Structures are given as structure tokens and as C-alpha cells.
Length: 334
Image 1 (cartoon, one colour):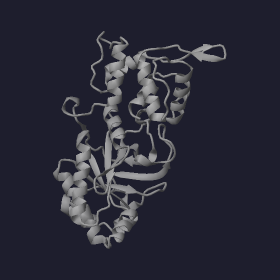
Image 2 (tube, rainbow, N blue to C red):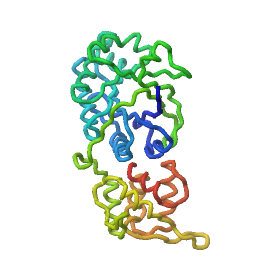
Image 3 (tube, rainbow, N blue to C red):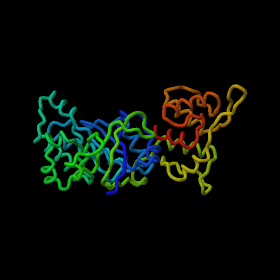
Image 4 (cartoon, rainbow, N blue to C red):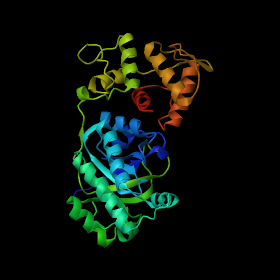
């Protein structure tokens, strides 16, 4: 069986460089879309947009705080609404965990196996009804005490299982049932700071991104870069100005390869070695990402270089003080 690896991420992982994750060989990224009553994960839109623009397939998950069947069904609707912004089809997982059960108890509800199973069915059926691929996230304990997998399969048809077990090998009981195995929470992946969940995928889920002309995938950071590059006179491989669409397509990537913002050494200090509207754009992104207030004067000198180094450190990039292809890319999605 052909397998591939991929992390799953949320706001808890901070700023993730999806391009570095992809370029390191990871084939799919799990993204928490949100949780509970339509609460969006703070990094969802950033992570989702980066995956779409970089051609990275995803699996979304919704952390459940449902304690009634109707609440679970509504959570599925929230999850699909989030998915629809970026994908016409993708897998969406129901994620009911220990914190979900604890929360329900504060509301006077004890989630037993019957209720958990019926909530899973409600969530997954709604996801399927709305045209997406339902998945259940679980572990050995929950599959024994909270989810009746046979009941779920009978209710919705073949069931995709995302199985969590942090070990060197999977339990034989679930080795032939799992479509995804989350085998560690302490993985190390380029582009992600600190430990991260890593999964082995055994099913290549269909993932269909929306066509750019049919959606609102315009990334304002990319759009502003395109405008600045056009003002500076950059042209694509066909000799034309960039289309200002907010999409990091081949022509925008071509222009990025032409740009290398750096300062000039002047004795023991640095002076401006590059100037223009793209520098203004970059200074603005540094200010937004770092929370600083450097002058956005379009001059890439000592201060701009220092800010670039700080930004590169924060985003786990090569710290050379030069704003080129990868640094500009990181500014698109952070």
C-alpha cells in the first residue's frame, strides 16, 4: 500500500511555512478549521490559503464541543462552510476528544457511547450530504468506549478512520481499518516551530480546490506585492505586467525570482542598496508581522536589513538579511 506523510496543524503551531513543509516532502496537511459553535481557528484562513496557492492537499478537522445530536450536525455545517471557501471537495474529520467530554459535563450532559456514536453519525452524514468526505478521528480508548464503528459504517457507508496512537507500530486491531495513522505528537518538520503531530496516510483522499475565477481566494498580501512590482516596472516571462489577482501563480513566482532586496555594506554599517515600491511593501509586512513601526520609505538600508533579519528569525527562514524569493513568499502567508 502506497503511503505518504503529513502534519496536522492549528493555531497552537504558530506561523507555519507551508512551502517548506511541502518542499520537505510532506504530501498533505491536516488543518483545524475551527471548533464548537462556529469558532474559526485563528490560523485557519492563512493555512488554508497557503495550501490552495501552493497546491497542497488537505484534510480539515473540526474540534467538537457538541453534546447533542443537533449540535454535532450544526458543527458539520460550520466545517463545510469553512471548507467551501477554498475547496469544492476535501475530507473533513469529526474530532471528539477528552476535552469535549469534560465540556459536556459542565453543561450537565454525560456523553456515553450511544450519544457519541450518534453525534458522529450526524456530523459525518451532514458532511457527506453537503458533498465532502466524512472522516472520524479517534483512538483506541474512544473506539472502545465512545464510538461504535460498525454502527457508524452501517449508517453512513464505508467509514474513513483517522487513528491516533503514539507508538512505533499500530495496533493490529486497527492496522487494516485506519486510513490515516497519527503516530506522534512530537514530530519535527521544516517550516514548523516546535513539536507537531505527524500522520501516515494510506488513502489518497480526493481534494478539489476551487478555481481562482470562481472564488474569493485573493490574498491581499500577494495583491499588494503584485501592485508594487508593477509600479517598479517588473514584468513576467512574457514581458507583461503582473495580473493583480492576489494569486501566487507561475508569473508572480517568476517576478519574485527577479527580486533581491539587500543593503550595501558601508564601512562598519549599511546603506540603502535597493529601493522602490516593493521595499515599501516589504517594510509594511515587517511592521505587521513583527509589530514594529519602521519608516516605510522604500529604502532598503540598515534598518530594513535589521527588520528583515528579525522577521527571518521569527519565521524560521535563512537569516541573511536579504529579502528574496523565500522571504517574500513567507510574507504572503504570515
